[in-house]
Image 1: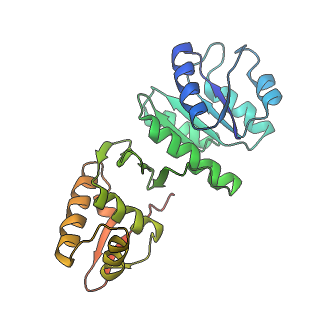
Image 2: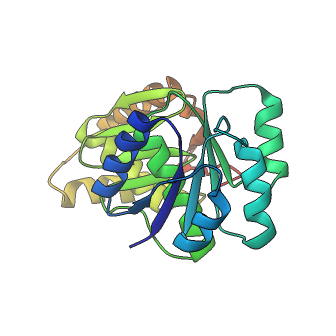
Length: 229
């Protein structure tokens, strides 16, 4: 179980985030004394830190600097401040990501999973949740969620997206997709596959991801991954 130190002084928000993270099997710790953040960090020895910018006494940037003097633990900033300078500052201080409030919780989970996977070379991603291009793909709710919003997919659309992501950056032939759908008892014809892919891309356009599904004429389809993933 990964330990997460959540440095957030809003008690209501802290409890809400903690409850949701615990449901995803993370072990969550808070700060008792915001004058002693570094000492409590040392005591907990977390696998990941989530920190707000606006905090009592010193801000999140100060504590990020202090933590970075002692540890390379992954750090995600969580803040309502949206000025580009804040995001740049957080990256310059060594943060791994920046999540702006208000946020979709699935996006936060996706970012946590991605960071832990990169740092620990471990698949921390829940079995029911896939991460692609910074978006959370919930295989139980049939949804794709990112900072631009959320779209709901049909079973066929979700299955096609999952197949493409499993082979991301590689072409998946139309024949392979049709065969996979057939074996999953979701038989589709060649024409129906085209219709489903077009609908999938149109829905993904709503959250700025449609361009990452490419049609390779005469070959099949390809799901690209963003360069910064």
